[in-house]
Amino acid sequence: MRSITRLAWLIFVLGAVLVPATGWGQPPIIEMYPPRPGWGSTPLSTVIGAQSSYVYAVGTFRLNSAMAREIRARAVEQEIKNSVAYVDAYFKRRQLNREYRAKEDPNHWERMKKLMSQHEELLRYRYQEILKGGDESLTNELNWILHELAGPTLAEEFLYSGAPLADSRLDIKLQPFEVEKIWLTDGGRKGNQFTFRAGSGDVLESRWPMALRGSECDVARNDFERAKDDTLAALRTGKAPVTPDQQKQLMKALNELFLSLEAAYPKERRQDANEFLTYNSGRQFLRTLLGQVQRLANSDDTSLFERSLAFKGDSVVDLLRHLYHNGFMFANPKPGGEETYRKLFKAMRELYVNLVSEPPMESAEKPPEKKD
Image (cartoon, helix red, strand yellow):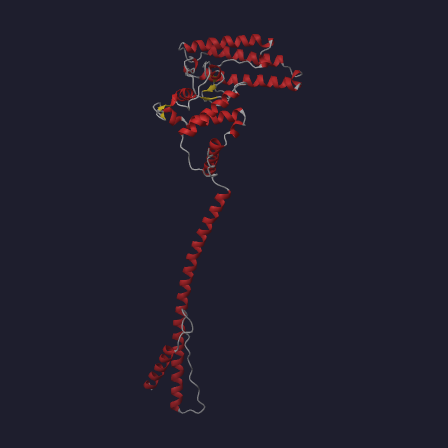
């Protein structure tokens, strides 16, 4: 009996080993043949049939269990590969999404970088477009170049082509009448910043608009000039800050100016468009003057009122050094000074182009240089 059982196991194992696999990487398909039932049987053949059926059943069970374990292992391996591929695809998709979104809607710094690149291109190669802008736009450009030139021109030992910068071809001379048309500011907040002529340095210089030049405003104008002169004279002698009485006098005189303007231009007179524009310019002037008076009353710095900060040079480089040393900026030009500001812009742009290294252009390629 035992020999018969062993013989059946041997046949089963040889059959499992000798049958080839049906595909690469797939578990082999083992063909097993169950024992055939016999029609005629004896006690011995019945025992042999039972033993062979038992062996076949056990072998089939073990073979199926082994194949199930292998299939499960392969499934787990594939699941791990799929999860890794999913994570890789997720981050790649997110990276592509960010790249495309960055192109369509760049962040603040990328936008600033692009704007600076475009501004650089405009200043160097298409500066005529800047000259077509308004007075405030031109003043902003002058102050921007002023800040950018702080390093190169502040070094007084800087030499250009072996000669001092002040004696080079880059330094454009300024006539006295041109200096009088240049207005500076101390850089205070808009609405209460001090503005003054570069040549005189007089703070609160009264250039009365048309609306305040009439006889109706003579008394109020004179009272304000008198209060202003008394206050500035006290500040120039070192008596700072402004006393309450001086502040009260200034505010009272300024209030009288507002009342005189309203009396000179009643509501009926302001119905005319030209009269309203004249009235509105006078009111805006008084509001600006009010902000300057309030700042004067709260300021402890007397250097702005000593007339010692007036510009004494005769060239653009001298003017830039004067602004650097005192912390001043350009103010908007008054009517009639636009041409002087255009001359300043061209001279300062020439300094910038020659003294400041050119950064790499991003928004557009550098235009080709013209050959003679």
